[in-house]
Image (cartoon, rainbow, N blue to C red; front, top):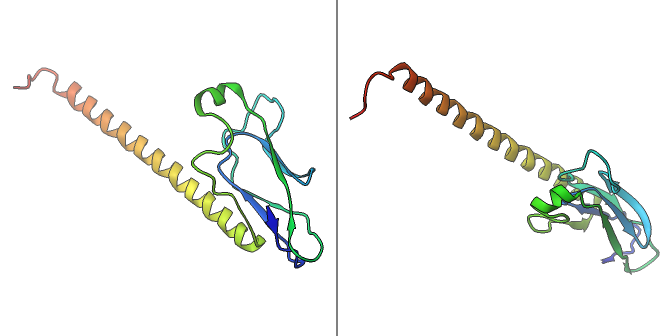
Length: 142
């Protein structure tokens, strides 16, 4: 990837990675999310995370980015590993990417709240139907 060499800091935003991973820039470890080795508590979905890229000299420069992703076999069997739901990773100004990461976390939280509310309402409706059935069991429907 090519980054400007004007002395401004540049960050890398990684999103939607289903496992723990380590990020390398030009062969040097710049960060990680979750565990990149076998553990008893695997990371199911790493949250959106920003990593500071090394600053270079004058003019544009090319930086090679490498990801080391650890795959927990039971999860990989069901969902796969690596990037999911498309790749929304970006490179840019740290302030913008921090805001973008916060927005992605809020979007993720809304998704979980919506799923929880749907499951809760479905369960309550099912309990109400069961209670009505048990209350008037002697009546036959025609």
